[in-house]
Length: 210
Ligand code: T5A
Ligand code: NA
Image: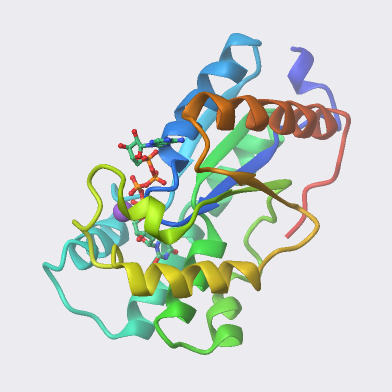
């Protein structure tokens, strides 16, 4: 297989942003786009609510259980750790992963609630580093106007404003910000180019790192 040749691997592409910034919509569109081009690709999301840990997280987000802020932070992180080895083997076998939220959500949301920033980052160390982080940038007020907002624990305007500030502190060279208040097709068009570029670079043998 073309994608199995040595040095060729899939790309780890992460979508981040406030609640209702459009991550899930774009992740579906990118999946179809890459599939259409014949690239092996899967779409993942965190929290992954299907595991035991994920069910605890889901109950917490739905306000059906209460947990200490530190405890839920560690559960979100554990939910990524339990998927780490599968993630690595998929990438090494040539499959690109489009991931809806990752470590950055963990740090941005928990630190917005008041936990220490460095403490929040610690349990994420050693997880695979994304090749590309696509930040869907939207004013919190605008996101709040979108469908379904307000159902889960963190969907409150004041908290989302703090989350936006925390995200700003996480930016690095692997990030690209996109104006997510544009129409859905316009956002998709911009993302397509960035994603294709990244997939190509990884195929050429860019190393996978922690
Ligand atoms: N969390 C998560 C942590 O605290 N720590 C962690 O470690 C992790 C991983 C659940 C919560 O958990 C927190 C963050 C979250 O608060 P989730 O299940 O991913 O995380 O929930 P959300 O990210 O909030 O997912 P949403 O479904 O709410 O938002 P999306 O995926 O960003 O948005 P999407 O695509 O579903 O779109 C929302 C609506 O807007 C419309 C869509 O049609 C939809 O109705 N829309 C647009 N409208 C106009 N223009 C556009 N460009 C649009 N794009 C989408
Ligand atoms: Na949500």
